[in-house]
Figure 1 (spheres, helix red, strand yellow):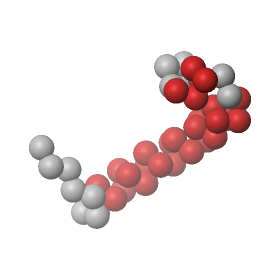
Figure 2 (cartoon, helix red, strand yellow):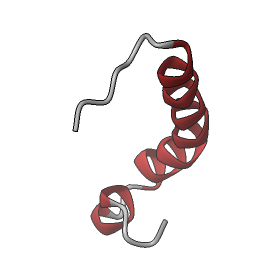
Figure 3 (cartoon, helix red, strand yellow):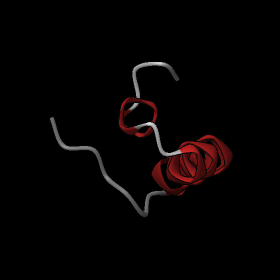
Figure 4 (cartoon, helix red, strand yellow):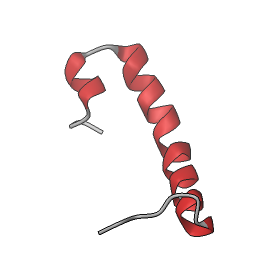
Length: 42
């Protein structure tokens, strides 16, 4: 994640939180899309 905003700011706490929470949030988003809660409109 060298190109993330957290790494550019140099705040180690924000960077760590970003690395911890990003994968679960991506999985949650994917699940919501699959079950139809979130709809992607082209």
